[in-house]
Length: 325
Ligand code: PMV
Image: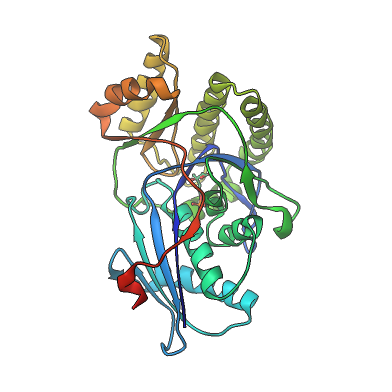
């Protein structure tokens, strides 16, 4: 029996991932770039246990079944095939972010699971290999292996599609939680729908590679304004391509749009802030560190506001004494 614990944080993309070119290997249609956060952690304990009949998965104290357990079991199957093991595992996970509301809880979830499960099954993987492994659970999880700014390369195939660190401007992110309920349609399903039905999909994929190249240059130049402009325009392009699916999918709510407008008004008043949003109505706004309080105050009227900074990539931590018994 072997028990390992890992902690991982979500990441919010500044250049978004939306669409796969290989669903089985979870290879993205284009590269992306994100900021790993220092809040909303997932802590996951994996106990490899020959004495249990099958995998178990408990999330925030609730035993899981159906799709939720299925995704974890399929991921553990991959780890077992790499480790040459057939032993089941008990997975116990605490997620501090609201699940499924576009705060990328699947990213922290699969990053923590990848690190804990690899160690519990005795695999000795470097960061790039852990990022590739996490990618198989949820694409965006590949980026949560990395501290702070992280670029996930589309790659030529499984071996080359992983995330690595990027240096760029220091920033804060203001997360505005508009609605913490589970989203109506998962990113996995909606991505597939967009790729199959949007007449703009090809343009989206090609322009994302161009946005990523521009973003990497802006990061290299430490140019916060350019990073911000690319972030906001790229987020709106993603939501545009999602809305152009058939049937259409819309994640942004009227309140989300009001926040985007408020951020434009802040810029007009001389405060540099830029918005983005994932597959849900919540909005993340980037600012320079000194402007964070002022922007957060302006956004309080729209929902619960949290100021977050760059956080660490997924790592092993000590197993809590109670769980180790
Ligand atoms: O990896 P998934 O299935 O959680 O998809 C993430 C998709 C977005 O959050 C909308 C964009 C991104 O790059 O994180």
